[in-house]
Amino acid sequence: MSTATTTTTEKQPADITKWHSKDGEFHRQVSSFRSSVEASPNAEFPAEAGRYHLYVSYACPWAHRTLIVRSLKGLEDVISISVVHYLLGPNGWEFASPDDVPGATLDAVNGAKYIREVYFKAEPGYSARFTVPVLWDKKKNTIVSNESSEIIRMFNTAFDAFVQPEYRGITFYPEDLREKIDEINEWIYDTVNNGVYKSGFASTQNAYEKHCGPLFQSLERIEKILSENEFLLGARLTEADIRLFTTIVRFDPVYHGHFKCNLKQIATGYPNILRWTREFYQLPGVKHTVNMEHIKKHYYMSHTQINPFQVVPLNNGPDLDTPSIKPTSRPY
Image (cartoon, one colour):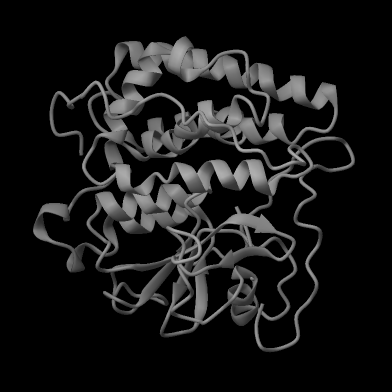
């Protein structure tokens, strides 16, 4: 997650490399911008093709959610993107030329050098963390939202008038499954999505063990669910799967070693999670959202309090291209 400035005076941000609190625990910041794009032309932020811009990091699992839904919903020609450098430095997320950092981009919308500049343009007095993803309104020159869980729900239906017919009506938060999605999201977010961070950024043994244990209890629970279901809630792919995938695809190459979540690996300890991960990864439109170079270099080179010499391990995790796994039916 991450960072911003502007041509006006800037506040100096807090130390963004300090990930734990005095109690040794990692506490995730609550997102500050919580508006919504809606299909109605009378909405505060009405859906329009070409109006909105998404700032992301390939490294960040929260931003990765939005890239996946943007792809699966056929929004890549409707919502433009900028991709930051994988390295999170003292000034936060920085834009870079793809010639210098393959996969990264310059900011063609606001001409910012750092994400922090985008935040200050929207709110000059902003003083919290500068995170990605950021959904930017190019007409109003402001941030619509920096909350990934809400951005992916906007992408479900708000832009259906602007996508090709085959993408219209696709939603990863269907009404008949919303209660079950909300329930599974709650415990997976707390113990898995955020659990790896609470384990990895813990600065005391007690804080680490407090969160590492529940993380693996939840992985066992997920393994059982996927032994009985193709996806988390049956034969349909939902946002619950999308939100989990961005953590699992990073688990073996990053969280197992870097964050000390090492009781088991996905590749050798969870055959049903591995099958599900391969099936998800092989869905059309998913593979190109996974940039393992950005993922690994971000974690191992940005978190110098954990890895001071910035040595990046060679392992990329399990091979997700083979064997080929096809859904039993169209999953969405």
